[in-house]
Length: 389
Image (cartoon, rainbow, N blue to C red):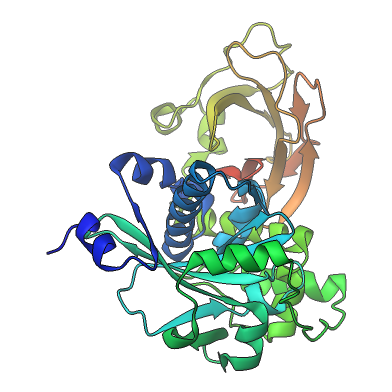
């Protein structure tokens, strides 16, 4: 088998970049940030693609910026392949694949027909783990893709055969310097009401091993993906539903807690109320748990406190609070604390403001047998604790 250097010597027209073990480590995404393995694989390929190509651009003295922050890319990578960068006024869409087939480039329709995502040029990127190499083997323009490409409704892609791609990236830099307008008009997306959008988001959030991008008409799907707020909401609900789908049956019985039966809870990290600096509520039972918020670039901790009070009619009143973790003074701003019903619908929610030293959900009362969940979310990090009364 030829090594990367030998392959690059034979193929001098296209750009070959070496993939090192360090590159793979940098590109490895956090599994909890994606609702299924398909999204995780999209994220891995695109993180690697952005890292290697971005490094090469910097070493070549070419200034670039990311069109979307990585936080903004999570909702896209969860459902569609591809990533975007900008060089000056030119937007490049990179489409990575690990297949060895170079017959054509296949670009998801979202990157072509959605105004907020489409680019000026599209780069075909092959990631070959056998040779530890990444090869940018051709590019085309938005105009060429729309006017000469073949649209396939089955997987909603535009494809262009390899012989119509330009292999030499120097030509791309020349076109970029000339500031050519290579974006052609695309059909406008019909209006989609907020109520209808929320209905679709619920429908599209059903857990599955694959992206739901072909489950509804493209104008409906596109209206959600083209709107940053809607696609972020879709992403968060998909994560939430994936966590609920894979979580075990409720394991923390509040009725057991009232009877001082804590063995199952203790094994899962629930402890006695242990922060004396916090004023204790007038609860029959208080248990707390340290929650790790594993973000991409940092790790934060908070304390989840659940207090329960037995009611004369046999029901249980529940109080839920979040307090800073050890060594912290305040709750991370924008942290969301939610009370979910058995189906995962949010019934109550509170969001931490700047400088909040604790947050608390409005108390709620449950009858025996009621199942519910408490969700803690900060950006793309999500934790769910499940209970039964």
